[in-house]
Image (cartoon, rainbow, N blue to C red; front, top):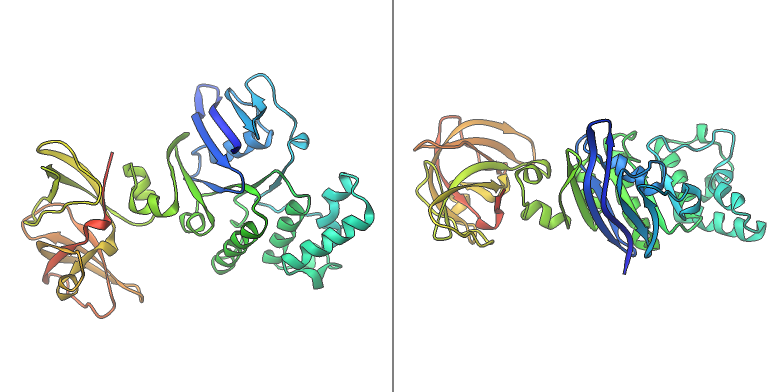
Length: 356
């Protein structure tokens, strides 16, 4: 059964549509991330779910009960939701325990039960020893844990998170993303998470909804978004890729300047015509490395245009000797080629997706 359903919701400011005919269906206990660049409508969508912004059209329902329409909005405090903001919004004059217990106090939870639930939640987020400290005495990651504990201790119907890790440094952001996923697996709150960080979304999500200019481009599992993108925008936004033109003939793809043919995993219909394809850099192989890869197809000769050593791999840009689109290739550290050197190119069809 659906826990949260967004049906054809719209929001415009003046003549500018911010969210355009969006429909989403979240199941009980699912973590769905709204992902996209700045200005794509993801935060506006989250705030409409929370009840902070009225709908222009459409409806939002929770557990089958309508909570928002174009003419009626149930107030945020009556939705059974908790929201974590980018700024954490924890009170500096309250201790960690007082911050975490604030929602319980507002709800009139008996003191003994509140004390027990606060202690349990602080242990879950590994802050039990810091219960009597104030926010100014905590690190950024610890403050984020306080915000998480405060949101979860009230046992919300739906948990909303608006770019909660954007103020943290890269290493701490990665650690906290794993922590959010761990907490979700433990409590199974239905969760809507907003971010513009692709790796963060891939780490924590059951499904990811990719937004572009107010529209939903694709919603799918992280694996499917990366390996089976449906549009050029999704292919280019989720990780690195090569977006090139190929000719399709009887289900086989050929790339300009290369002699080999590819049969991608997905069926490609139609006669001789041009299509756009996404090819992930790690699905291309140079030299002897490619011939040793099971399933890789020999495509022809390429010449190295540029190279960058990134420690874990070489980042090569190559061009077909016969002309055509240049391609980015990720190769292992031991695969050393000079600029201008020619090499055989192999492609794994499993890393190729036809996009619209």
